[in-house]
Structures are given as structure tokens and as C-alpha cells.
Image (cartoon, rainbow, N blue to C red; front, side, top):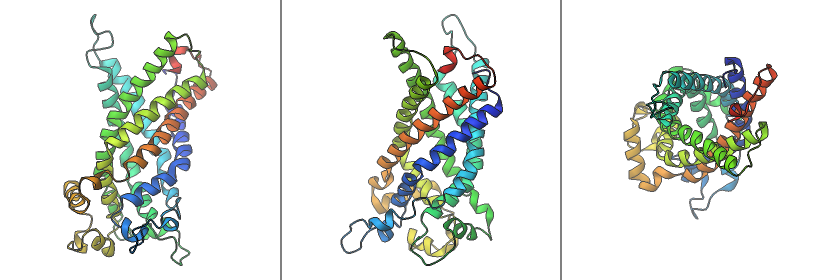
Length: 325
């Protein structure tokens, strides 16, 4: 949509992120706890191996504040970069009579734009993601008045740069995720629109656009989330290892010295998970991640798309049918 300003995109992306973070955050907390190397020790009964539901489901919003603060600018930065990069690459993509849409396939353009946007977003989001995942693991039954987020922050007081220790892991997960999600999302959105148009059911309008976007984004997000689950499991372990807590280092692997905490490569951690849990260990939390990503992506991009259309209309732009999709 050519009429959207950077402010429109920032506001639409930030509002979408804020809304969805509050809705799906509990599912993200459950996913983190399931993927944690301390899951069996903290959240299951040692004698019966049954899930300790009170412990698992307690404090599901721990750490949410850090994510909300960082998600607003990171989402705005993502969508600004994505929209502008996509427009630039589309403009630079040479067209021919046989390739009216350009020599470079449109899915590759979308994948490149989303990857560039993700690198920018991850730089902003990484510290909050590290704080969030460690705060999600704080024992909320402990008799302390200190907020879990503040407890986590205190561990980084002597080494604040450790907050960015998970950047490579986060980008390593999000790059393939967005490179797969956005081309699939754009293709599904166009396919649903074309199908409704052939059947004479396409009416246009803000609500229809939002629903088509939500269904397309939810489906694309779920597929992408499940496919990238092994990278997400490794990312979770790297971020949980970032606090420099010696006792947590021993929980990861009794043979690891505390000073080596957080220094293992992603490949080494993946091999460690394989030794501990086998192939299944790399897919822990995959189903839950797929569900919450379907809900989150569907609502997220649905709200974003509707929001930028609303802001464009409010700014006096005339919206045509093409703009709605």
C-alpha cells in the first residue's frame, strides 16, 4: 500500500504485537518450560513421572513486561524494514515479456525482505527474549517479593553484554522461520483471494481483508513453526544458559564447568540434546509452538493488515480493492 507512511507501519506493527503478546504469552511460557533441560526435575513428580500441573501452570505471565517493552519497537522495525525492502526489491526486479512480475520469483523477494527485516528486529528483541525465557523459569512459589523479571535482570548486572548472547540463536531460528512463513503467507493470501473471486464471493472491505490475512498467516505460521522447532529448542537452551548461574550450568550437564556456561555452540547444544533425549528431544514443544504460532501469527498479521488499512483511510487515502489484499 503506497500510501502508508513509516509511522503508519510502525503503529500498526506495534499495536498488533502488543495485542498478540498478551493473548498467547501463557502458551509461550509453557513451551519454554517444556523445552527446558530442567523440565523433568521442576515440573514432574520424580516418583510417578506425572506432570506437576500446579507448578507447570503457575506464573504463566512471568517476564511479559520485558517482551512488551521490546516487542513494540522491534515489530515496528520489522514491518518498516519488510515493507520498504519488499518494495525496493520489487522495483529493482527486472521484468520481461515472459516474466511480467520480474525475473526473480516473488517468493524469493518476500523471503529476502523478511530475512532483512528479521536481522534488524532480532537485534532489538534479543535482550528481552533472554530476560523473558529466564523469568519464565523462575520459581514463583519461592517466598520473595522480588519480581521474576527483576530477579533475572540482577543476574546480568555484572555482565550486561550477555543479554545479547542469544542473538545468533534467535536469528538462526527466525530467519528460516520468516523466510518460509512470508512467501507461504503471501501465496496463501493471494490464493484465497483468487478462489473467492472465481466463486463470486469476494466483497472487499476491511473485515474480509483481515480474515483472509489471519487465515493465511495462521496456516503459514503453524507450518513454519513446526518445521523450525529443533532450532527453537536449541535457542531456548542457549538463552536459559545466558544468566551465568553456576547451578543451572550443572543442571544442563554435570560435566560442564560453571565458567563454560553459555559458551557452547548451537551445534554442540544440539548434540547434547540428542545424547540426552534422542531425536524426540529436538522436537519438544513443537505441537504447542505450532498452535500458539497459528493463533499468534493469524491475529498478529490480521491486526497489522487491518491496522495499516485503517490508518491509511484515516489519513485520507482512497483505498481500492488491490490495497485490501
